[in-house]
Image (cartoon, rainbow, N blue to C red):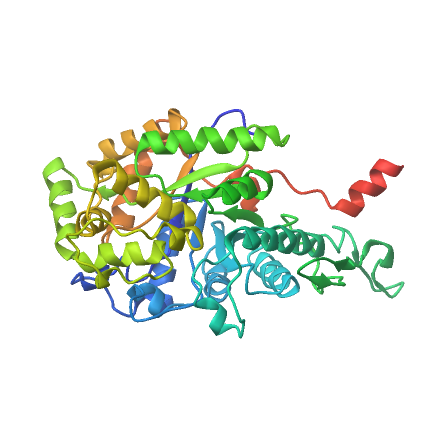
Length: 443
């Protein structure tokens, strides 16, 4: 791994915004979530800022309480494939659920994206927590939390096995001899497991980076164990530096006990910087954001953490209801974090909802103050980098124009892309093909 530790930065493509009220900003395009030109514009700005990757989150079911961006949006691999042709260096990370896909299709989709982008694809592996998703896929029930991670482990194993079914030099293409592919270097997987069966080989060869980079975002016990074993990058959502440091130490220790490299997985908290050229300007921008929010945003965050449970049915000023059992079968990490906060100060539904709607983070201030905060989290082992949200229109431009140069001057971030593939730029090792490795070890 790299000796000089530097920040990893991703940018989340969130169209009209990540909350329930962002779309109401006068400068928001209400169709941004399905506007390719908007995403292309953001992608080019992020690449100009030398970001490591673009990140597309996803969800497979909606209802009347879903946030606007999730109500109307592109499918991740489709938009990333389009953006591959509009960019040259930046990584392209998409979210695809293991609970409602077949490994062969997922392997083929991401291998195709990897070739289209010349080795810049990444897969954010999720298990889907919204129970309503089952109805969209003709399933009688949504898998329980612990079962979803068993499914995930097998699904990922099959996908990576299919990615390895072609060795790196299997495609010969010798016109004189008439040999297109070396049959000795093309392998069937012949997987027959508890949840999936897949013969293989995959019908597309390995890309320049070998395999797409594996991302994961779980924070429950099962999620952290899965990330420690399988993920190369972890996206997480701590609210404070102390939370971030605790999560960072815990996950790195789990990975180390499994014999992984001390640097992996890279841990990237989400951050929504609000940059102002002066402190007063930054505060005014923050107040501009809070003016957009409503109790509905907070109730939306609550509902999403508890499997779309309707908190409007309660008196908002009454004690928080007993819904832990709902959280345990949905987004366990988010629900537990909310319950811990509620119990700490005996918060009502209204109080926790408003707190969720208008959080004030460390990353609000002048360019120097924002850079200081990012550096502090990084150097005190709260993060290996950040997955950046755009809190307000124009914030990505301000971040790239004013914060990135400070990080570069401090030696914390690249000035140019160093390599051709996403893995190389991120500093993640090349995955040696299993069949090539076995042959080398046997000789």
